[in-house]
Image 1 (cartoon, rainbow, N blue to C red):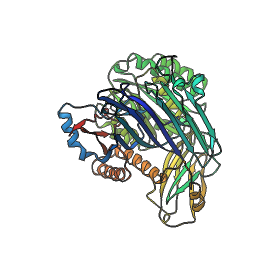
Image 2 (image 1 turned 120 degrees about the vertical axis):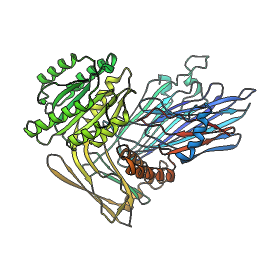
Image 3 (image 1 turned 60 degrees about the horizontal axis):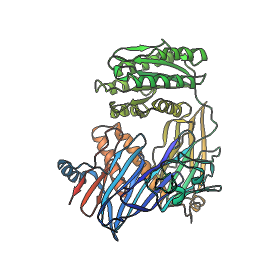
Image 4 (image 1 turned 90 degrees about the horizontal axis):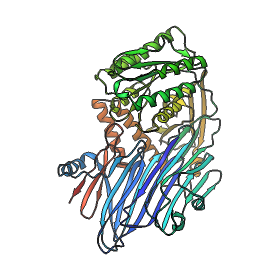
Length: 594
């Protein structure tokens, strides 16, 4: 399930938080979150106030400010290189307390501290935005609630507006008691929902007479939207459009899956136990129409069977027994293992042993480092775009950059598997996302003279429970926008969607749930994400051009991305906030003295 704004809020207990408000507006999947915290120093001397928020890795910070005794200190977004000299100078002085760092599989942490004079007040405000990505049929809002003290005015407000209609809405929490449940209200109609959580101090109190708090855990909201049997839904605001497409009740293509499992020495112990546990569950989840095989590798490569087998109950049980015998030891031959998987699919395809209209994929799980830079080219040339390659990197010793580039070059994606107690569930969760391919070779078409700067509109695969999103700019004044949509299932099909522009624009008039030109910002967000993905598999001048486009759009729309930084000015220093990337260790963002 998709995570959208994910928050953890904490300010030092030495400072009293008298107001903490999380305001999230979700308009047609695009989430705009503002966190406002007001604190006061009740002591007779200066104290340090620490403001921390955990937000999704996929979100872009757009604004931060501190107001101290009536004077506002804003954050300024600029080209990353222009802040690098300040950053390097601070690091050389041994100052390395960062503003932003990765804190887990989904989150990154923003933190800033400031000295507060006796009896003085400080107002912190952080804003970030994200396009929600549908996974397994749901959008999910996960809010990490952890103020570590009782807060006089604590409130979480989430407003959702979906013109297509809201088909499902639910809330869940790890900390809400019967008493706290009375502070939760949920109001929903056809297209809007408002979820409010506003506990009093007495409701927050864990133990009568003490100042400990119940507010410590996860607060979740999950929802989905209604869909008609058409070519999706087009929405338009101020000359920009977004087109959503997620067909329902489509039968899945049969799959041909080769699981390529690293059994080298570094996979020993807990990793191999979790891998075996996950693989047995994944094998059970194969559809009877699917075909599968296993490639195990360390310094040597072992193919379980000479051909892929149909996922009958008997063959699945055979495979599970084989998985149980896996042990770890030796080095890591990623190249040989993937070559063997490609050859196996080639052989069975040529011999017509695999189902017609089936989807072939390779799922690699490894914790190793590549032994040579030639591997990516070898696999790209051997595969020739025939099979989708999904690369799962176990832990932080793996070269994620290497896996990501190799996956993207072969039509797949990379994902990091974290070495936690639920690693087996992470592996199963990824498989569930790719287990049901329902469409292939999808093309979203628009009149050539009607649109400009359209985001990616060709897609190799669509999985059940996910969603295609295309955005762009209307280039001329039109009454209607026509969008033929072509794809393959059992045969080539074409659907058509026609949107009356005036009617579509009226949907978003005078709605309190709307924030500015949100579809234009959605377009910018989506464009940046897709350009960053392209740059991950590009080299040289091509990569430089892609990064230049990312930089220009980031600066124009005020997003903190891997190509920009936010310089935060404080009374006694400046700090630079850079966006961490999954490929590397979290970037340290250093304070810079004035």
